[in-house]
Amino acid sequence: DAGVIQSPRHEVTEMGQEVTLRCKPISGHDYLFWYRQTMMRGLELLIYFNNNVPIDDSGMPEDRFSAKMPNASFSTLKIQPSEPRDSAVYFCASSLGVLGNQPQHFGDGTRLSIL
Amino acid sequence: SQELEQSPQSLIVQEGKNLTINCTSSKTLYGLYWYKQKYGEGLIFLMMLQKGGEEKSHEKITAKLDEKKQQSSLHITASQPSHAGIYLCGADLRGGGNKLTFGTGTQLKVEL
Image 1: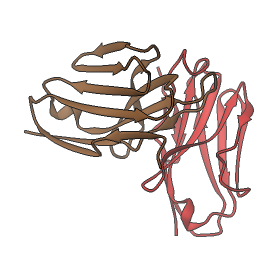
Image 2: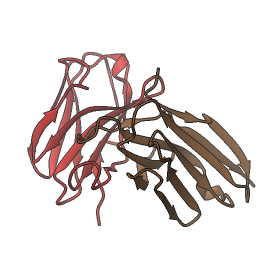
Image 3: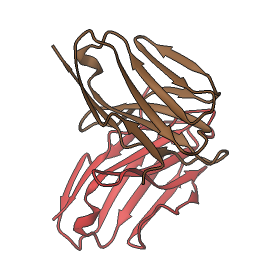
């Protein structure tokens, strides 16, 4: 079975540019999560969706960040405009059901570098 | 300060040795999840614990959640090079939600 698929795997861009990260969750999973991992702050939840609807976006750092899930098989995380401090590894995860019943399964991440 | 503390931060063991990684919280752990991460890759789910006193094993890895549900340990028996990586504990600290709080991670190296 295919796992969570993220693209691109690596992204290097200049400050001020728009960045779009993509995620395809595991088929049938109804929860989708976006995380950010940095050396300083570790792994942090940014936002999560249930049945394509954003449920909790309290972890989104600024208005420059936005996430969408237009359908059950696709989600995007967008940063506009990007800044060097946004450099991190961004993970997407999905789960079947609520926490406590099912674990979250992670993609391989997108390593983002903002110059 | 971190809500979820892991110890040690890093560990180097010889192949064949046993080791233990701890994950401690000042709050109740409504659910505790252990993951393994290799550099440049995503997190691989290992085990999920929910009940106080619960213990689960998979191959040579055993995870326990203490009775008070504030600490979990991950024990590896007869370590192998394939066990090397970063081990992360993630916890539901609020109960009933879907938010996982992650620990700082433990980097494990296994020497031949």
